Amino acid sequence: MTTRADIQAFFDPATWTVSYLVADTATRRAAVIDPVLDFDFKSGRTATHSADAMAAYVAAHGLAVDWILETHAHADHLSGARYLQQRLGGRIAIGEHIREVQATFKKLYNLERGFLPDGSQFDHLFHDGETFSIGGLQATALHVPGHTPADMAYLIEDAVFAGDTLFMPDVGTARADFPGGDARSLYRSIRRLLALPPATRVFVCHDYPPKGAGSREPAWETTVAAQREHNIHVHDGIGEDAFVAMRQARDATLEVPTLILPSIQVNVRAGQLPPADDNGVAYLRIPLNTL
Ligand SMILES: [Fe+2]
Image 1 (spheres, rainbow, N blue to C red):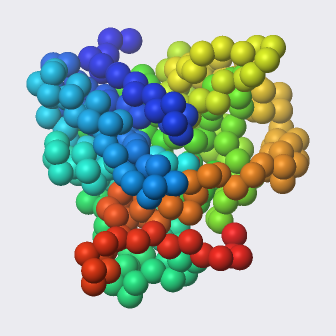
Image 2 (image 1 turned 120 degrees about the vertical axis):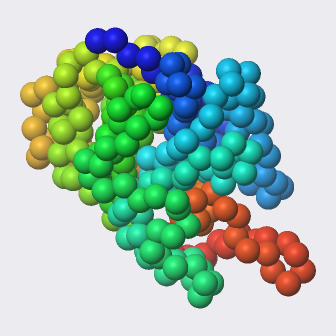
């Protein structure tokens, strides 16, 4: 298959997140996927090194950004979408089921009245199967719930950006125990992605390389064929019930992610920081004894 997609990965070692820049080399139009806003929880300070690296690449290659795509409301890093939009333009988009996630977390954080759980913080909400273009590249938004109810994967030419639906084959799959998460839905979403042509390239949103035996450097690109053969949680032959039992048992052992509370309240706002108090300082909220 011929494709003019130039795919550049940006790995953030602080959160193990992989952001992507996907460009049509013919028209120089591009999409950013899952950008990171750096955040130091101890000092409450944000920084833009990760996003600036993407912006520098865009400038160096003379690209124009049409889309800033989020696969979901991440629980492990703050989104750099709003910051990058201010620098580069582009429409910030996510799946339409983000409204459910916003409603859940508006309640949990007791967010201000003016925060509406209607998706209006984003420029575009994709429905399942919606097609769009990045210059001459053909793209399809796929609703792949499970990790959260709103997860999306983006199929761009012969590459699928799986978000947290699939990890590298030796790491497996993401947890499904966040509010609205569901292991059974996750399994069905994964099988849907694995029904794509075997040569489809799969780009993951995180990598947590195994330690000890089998240890390796961080990686983020694999294929549908490799996932079907080798994914430790969902290779061909593992049925839905077995997957669900494994996922639920494993999720019960996992700690709450370090940045979940700061991340989600920013990410349901499309990467916008909360409105400032009357002293001009913006605050994040930490609900006590609720999670
Ligand atoms: Fe996630």
